[in-house]
Every structure is written in structure tokens, then in C-alpha cells.
Length: 142
Image 1: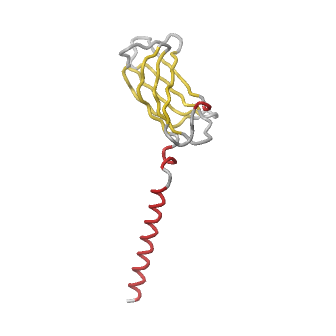
Image 2: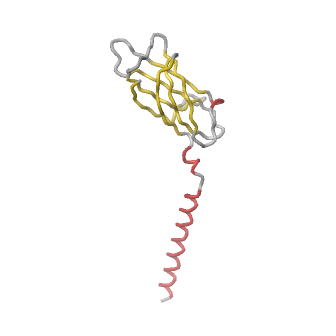
Image 3: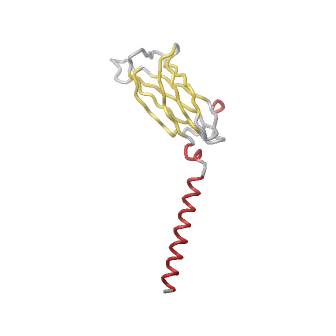
């Protein structure tokens, strides 16, 4: 009988430990789980090129740039139009929380975009060593 009681106590202790661990994980700040994320919102034409609305979050002390690139999808002939824009690290608010930003993308020389064009937009972080990460892409019609 004593071994049965001991087994139940051990099982109860193990279950309590698992529940305490799960509770600690659930109570941990959710901000840590959402750092360095990107999401692309509306992409639109503007006088100087394109504008992409981006929601981002990043770690405090991060020294990376937010980069956006756009490419016209299915160009006719040699009309390969591209555009790019950057938000420097000093302009980013890195505190684990989500923030909204508008990235202005300037077209390359000879590139042009018009209403109705289908474009592929990619956003990502770019670090000082040349690595990119947290890449997100979308295809939209202007």
C-alpha cells in the first residue's frame, strides 16, 4: 500500500511541476515572442514612386535597417521596373512592441509604375554584416 501512495505523490508532484512550468511560460511577456517580425499592409502609388505600409517589431538595441523592394510582376517586353526604400535603424522604435511605418520606395532609373500594375513587394531587416532576415513578401495590384 505504501508504494502505491508513493507513486501517487510522485505523479502529483510531477503534474504540479508541469503546471507551474506551463503557467510561467504563459505569464512570460508575450513581447519577446513577437520581436523582429514584419507585416506588409497597403502598397500604393505616390508622386515619387511607391509607398508601403509596414508593421514591424524589433529587439531593443537592434542596429538593423528595414528594407523594402518592389518588382513589377509580368512586365511587358523589357519593362522590368523595380523600386527600393529603406528606414534607417535610428528611425526604428525597437522595444518589442508593434509599430507602423511607411516606407517610400524610389524607382530605379528607367523604371515606372502605374495604376493597375501588379507588383511583388518584399520587406526585411538588413544588418551591418550584410545579412537579411524576417523576410515577408506580398503581391498586390496598384
